[in-house]
Length: 544
Image 1 (cartoon, helix red, strand yellow):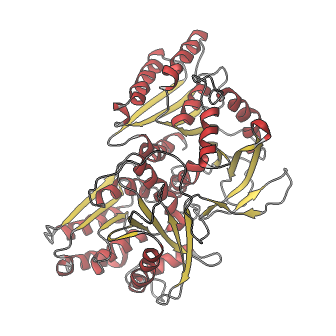
Image 2: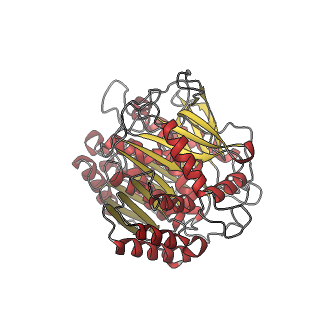
């Protein structure tokens, strides 16, 4: 797995071009961190806990999704579960991502030891899966369930690569621990497919247990990965267990590093028991429940603050260099992620996996968001992402001012260390942020040349965007840009979905010179869940 895929970040404030970088921590809301040393392996572990919105430990208990390789995959799973909750595709869950603690842990060697069932490399480099299983059973799960309101009768385990191998190991050796398993690209090739041999002999331990298992690997992976997944699946099928719901998928276009995003997205809803998904009362303020634990943090190479209306410091840009702690002087492209408070660390999951696979080059990434409480952030994004103010209250209609800030301040600041112009600028945005991006696209001088948009709120103000497009068409000229618009087929049944399809049809009919437009309707998804999936798929196409 990629070493660049990072969940625990150190943040540096750069006060001027020559200032030394000083690391500080920036918290992710509604998360916590626990650390302990295992009596079974002797190793230091860290648990990164992601709580659902409106977490209510008094009146509700939650299924826990245990995520292996939390140093990489917390970035994938926590935002994913939030999107699924918003779209009512599943009920709220707690994410417990397992990684390593201490100072500068060597993730590669530690996971290689913990997640493999035999010492196939020799010298104790591998083969501690039995010990780590004991850590999971007697230390990790009790720690989580003693601190949070959990449903002990339903747990899910997910992992990728060696983590997927360990997921298969737990299924065969401790099927009482979890009811659902998602094994992404499991490295079943290990030790001449020893896990396949064990699967063929597991009928007795698996009999009578209602288990849900999804094995998902990339269609473009190495033969050994695909063959191992197929052999493990065939071994389980051969047991003829009527109580087990088992699936095998070869995800199109995916390879080893990035397939986990698709595997968790597709697999998680399938391994959870069907339930009545309760609709939340509304966005509102999060409960702010945090307990005594410190939060999960993310890092960046620098953070720049900008003054907002009424002399409030409310806007923020966060810059991630291609390699941590270095200053990029030349990059193939720059990616601007709007609504960074939600989407930046989620995008890092896809970026890191694709970088590992060689599907994208090293890129400068810039997140743009606001400081303040959730309600303050909501108010500010409503104002600065919308092009008109149908309310007449001043609460909306600040899109042009935000565009000026982006062109005159944020872009120059983010790219100030580059000695050459980037090959392209890609903006990544959803909902109202994507509406703003489309107003930029239709302006006289667009800020970006690539647009990755999910569920843009083009229904805004009686589809005002159609009026803007008509003015743009009347001016004539080319529109040199690559645009991908993703939306869920559940969106298509709404006012927004219908508006998106009308806007896409209008834009397509114009035949603008230089414009490449690709709309994609995602099956079984609403806008919130379509976001992370669309970002993942579109990023590969727009950021090679």
